Each structure stands twice: as C-alpha cells, then as structure tokens.
Length: 631
Image (cartoon, rainbow, N blue to C red):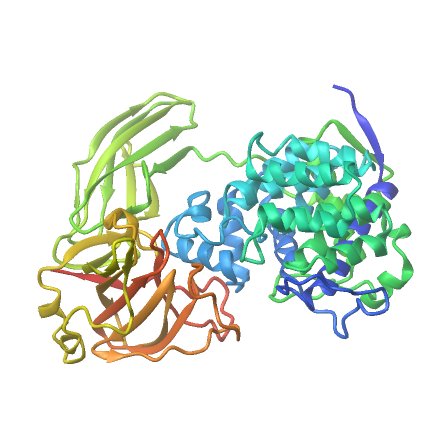
C-alpha cells in the first residue's frame, strides 16, 4: 500500500479553517434562514449583531464526543443513543427521528418511516464535516461514516448528499481544485439519481458561462421545492457558491447567503469546504474577527473548551487514531505531544459481541388491527463454538405470536428464523409497542433484543361525497353538510360512523388514494377513536391538500395561526399546515375530520404534538404513547 504523508501543521490548519468557515457561514446564514428571495447582502451588511449557536455544528460536536467515548467503530445505534442522551433538537426531520426511535424503530428505518416530507432535507448533509475531517485523504471511509449518520433521520438524496460532502472534505487535504473535489464526491452519488442531476446541472451552468444568479434560477426551475430545507435546491446553491466564488472566501459566503432558502446550511457547508481548502490562515481576518475563535452550542455536551482551535485539535486527534487502524494509507507526521496523547485515549478496538440479534420487518415496521405480520429474526454467532438453544418472541399483552423455535447456529455463521405476530382485534392498539427476541442456550446463557412495532392508527371513513354541476366537473364544498353533522356535535359519532369503511394508517400520512380511487374533488368524514393514558394539553396537527374541519369529542375546533407565524399553503401538502390546541381527556377521545380534496391526489396527515418547553434531551414532541380504540 502506498502511504501518503500529511504534516500535522497542514492537517490542523485545514481542519481549523473548516470549522471556522462552518461557524462563520452558520452565523451569517441564520439571520435569513428560510427566506426564499434573492438577497443583496454585502460584506458590510452580512454580519449578524449576535452570533448564535447552530445545529449544523452542534450535532457534529456531539458526534466527536461520541467517538471519543465509544470509539472509532461507532454505529448508527451509538449515534442515536448519544442524540437521545444529549440533544433536545426536534426540528423537522430531527423530530421524526426522535419519534421513531422512541417507538423502538432504529436506523436506517428511523430515517424514512413516517418522515415523507423531511427525509430528503438538509439536516444530515450539514453534518458531513466531522467525517471528512477525521478521514483525511480517505473519501470512502468518510462516506461510510456519513451513511451511518445520515440514515438516522434521512434517506436517499440527503444521505447521498452527506456522503458527497464528506468525501469532498476528506479529499481536500490532498486536492484543492474544487472541480476535481466535486468529481471525487460524485463517486458516492448514484448515476441517474435526482441529486446527481442537481450537481450535473450546476456544473453545466458553469461550463455555459451563466452568472450565479442565472444558475440559481436554473436550479429552482428544475428542482425548486416549497420546503426551504429541501436538499436538492440547497445542494445546488452550495455548489454555486463554491464554483462562482472562485476561492474568494467573502465572495463565496455572499453568494451562498444571497441565494436564500436554507442559508445557515448552504453558507456553513460552503464555508467549511472553502475554509478547509484555504486553511485557517488564509481566511480573511475581517470574517474571522467576530467569532473571537469561539463557538456556542444549543445543548450540553461534556466539554472543557469552546475554542474553535481546541475543537480542531480534538478532531485531528481522532483522525490520528483512525489513521493507525482504518486509514493506514495516510501517515500524519509532526504531531504535537499533547495531541498525540489525546489520540491515545480514543478507543480503537472493534467491539464484537459474542451474539448479535438482528430484526427484519420484511416491510413497514407497523401492524394494523388484527393483522398477522411476519418478522425475521437473524442470529449472528461470532463465537468459535456453536449455539444450541431456543429462540422465542415476546409480544405485548393481548397479542399473538408463533411458538419458540429450536436453533442450531455453527460458529461464525448467521441463521434466520421467521415468526408470526398478530395484533389485537379488541381493546387498544398502541402507537408504541415493544417486542423482545430472546435467545436462550442449553447452557443457560441468554441474549435479548428489544425492538418496536408501530401500531397503525385505525380510521373510519364516510364518503366520498361530491356534486357534478356539469358533465366535466366534480366539486365539493367544506361548507356543505354531506351527512347529519349534528350527530357529531351531540356526541353520537359512533352512530354516524356505524357502517363506515374501516382502514388503518401505519404512518401519520393517511393512505387516502389507496382507500379511495376517485380522482375528482370529494368530501369525506373520518373518525379516529384516539386513546390517551392521561389528560393532557396537546395540538392536533393536520396537513391537507384541501380544506379541513375538525371536531374533538363533539366540539368544533378553532384553528390557530400556524406556529411559525405564517399561513401555510392551502393545497400544497406539508405535515404541519393546521394546528388545533386541545385538551385530551383520559381514555377515549373521538376525533372527526371533514376533508375536502382539491387536488388530483389526496394528501392528508394527522399527528399529535406536545411542545418540549423544558428542552428535555431525547423527548419526542410527536406523542408516541397514544393508541386507537378497537371495536
């Protein structure tokens, strides 16, 4: 193997420059985050009055802590546990990850299940730097770490984007040409993918001599999304800043900032990449001065210093530890004694449990009323001796499960066993259900693996109803009563819905088009018998490509202003369009939704939210301890 040498002074300067660029970009971008218009900032107006903490950096500081504590063979599960232990962040896809993990659903499934709107957004591409910086000269290793991270709360395009950036950031220690670095990153973006299309479009705009403003419009024409955090437009803007910035730090930052949309992310990533290419010494002093070489965090992680230089030394110490085990093709020379000492405290052993129990849901990690579902339990025997014993599946009370099976697993082999589980028909099907696979050997050894199976919400549906004023039109009106609505307000919902169609929804977004194939406008009434273990104040949160009206326990609810202070689009679905503040009573609560579809595809979602006012780490704002009354 050919070994390349990287002098520590160069390594440190580039990592330091990357973190400084990250902090600068995150701070200047945060002031207009989410504003989609084309801005006109200059070097005189770009700086905020107060430099805030930024989740772009915070979670990476947490990942650094996780590696220092758990070692270089860190897993997605390790990262998830660290998040739950330390971070309260619940924004968008972060909240969906916390909801899934609280229900026992682990990465990579936690990244895509019940997360349709946010799973291809910017939350994980902004966490790429740590993986590139600890894997200097090894893009493949950096991308493999990035995949472990990205699948916590994203899938596909976003995970590939994190891998793309991490590969670039690993390669910049030996290559400074941005075009060549982009080509390195493209090795981790699948051919024919939407993300690849964005990257190729930006490169083509550059070759054609378009201005950065023209390139921005090209990206929006082909990849624009009403979600300002969508990965596609924002990756495009990041690359526009890097290519049209032409290695000028100030120009690069201003282009990223003036493109708008998810500016704290685009500015921070462009700043980190260019800061890594230039090194800290070459970042202009006027851009660095407001930082005072310090960073802030929005949650607590055990740290002795909040100096960016110290963060860079710690990052390099991890990189040195990795170079001794996983990145042997790079030798880091001239390491200061105190950094070398830090690197020696990083765990580098590969944890190998004697026995691993793996779960395959063979589909969605969810089960419906009375459904019989097949699960596959895999046993991986890492021992030098065989395993002889019994495998059983423990399920919640009222559920059914197939009998235990006899297992014989030779040394260093894997065996798979299938079990049937059956959800109850009566009582309550809870959202969160923890099952346990238990392996018991003839010698009395026992291994256990807990995992979650989401209980699908049970709905009843009346309709569809519509009118046909002409031969070419079908219309429905939220103001028109298509059923006797007085039965709702008088508490006789069950009487109204006694002959209704029953269906289940494994995710917050209801499978409306699977239930109803009708393509015109229509009105439906839906009943959900929501069970709460206690009385609590919550918000019912609904997304709808159409009009909605909501009753709880017979009371017509008043919608409050969207929690972020702006009206949502009426017909372009997102999961947080309509908010209703309510008090759930202990036991059964009857939720009735009147939904008028106004678009070709029906899009309707329902969730229950409770704010994390105390900023408790690991708390799921999307309530997971509720259930559906069965009957």
